[in-house]
Length: 286
Image (cartoon, rainbow, N blue to C red):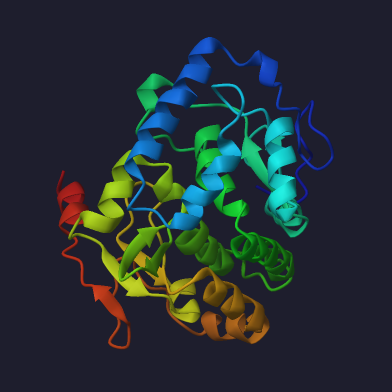
């Protein structure tokens, strides 16, 4: 979406809209409760404990879709973040500005029963259940703000597509090494019943130790489960590497480097799991 696109009718200049919590139907609240119960029962032992700690901010006094006003009271007390509603996808500059100011943009709509296991555009369950618990973690909250600040700078280098890969492979589809094993933390995984199992258990995908430059060379899948996942050692290390990296020369280096396919493995990768790619090969043959 173009950076200078005007906000749609009814939206403020920063593309936010009222959540209009009172407009949700009983069926929409029931869908949230169904998704919440399914994921929160399956994730213990698979997700980073920091996510489960943060999940408490979503345990509202009423069942159903969280009211952002009540949610923000709890989240602001934890880390100074808040959730704002938007009518859909927003321009990159607007998105980065919200993150840089500790505001997370969430869609208002929730998926239908027919979309329970897959939908293309992120809904309120993905945005709020998937993202908000870790926004209650001080270090990850700082990482998200730093990413937004870096995103604003990236617009001046024409390197947005490279930086988007960092968001994709950490915030959305990241794994973390904890307690001698791998745990989930990316919102795209923790809000997906199928990928919550696939990312940890399936022999198909590669699991590769986090390397900033290598990751930013790697293309990703937007239509199916990932062919590679990148594993961080800790949130502190992720924040440190992000804050200590001078991205301007990194972008210049990346311009001279070929992009890598999602299933690529390099000789100097820290390979945790060498995937069979059986899932992706089977889907390609259909």
